[in-house]
Length: 88
Image (cartoon, rainbow, N blue to C red; front, side, top):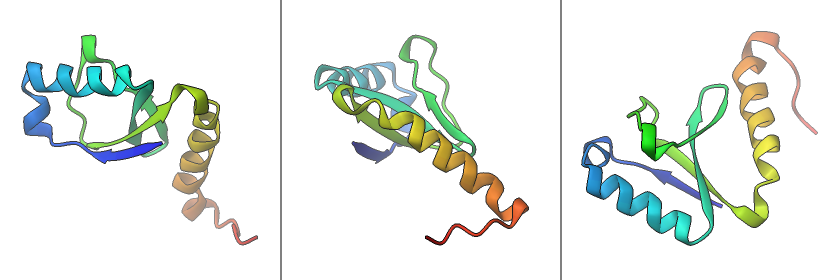
């Protein structure tokens, strides 16, 4: 798994954006935006510069952890509102 802080100005350049994502895809990674309530797939053909420029890239052999990451992010987004104890 890779976590990257992506520069929005660089990604505005079509060549850089495609080169970066093509490189990661060639290594077998799927990239997702880290949003407030979960992960959202980065779609280069319909690319949008998001406020959050943090990406997580998950290798295809580990893609099953995406659901767990989604749940964890969503739980932690709402946990302060619910006041749940997360200590183990």
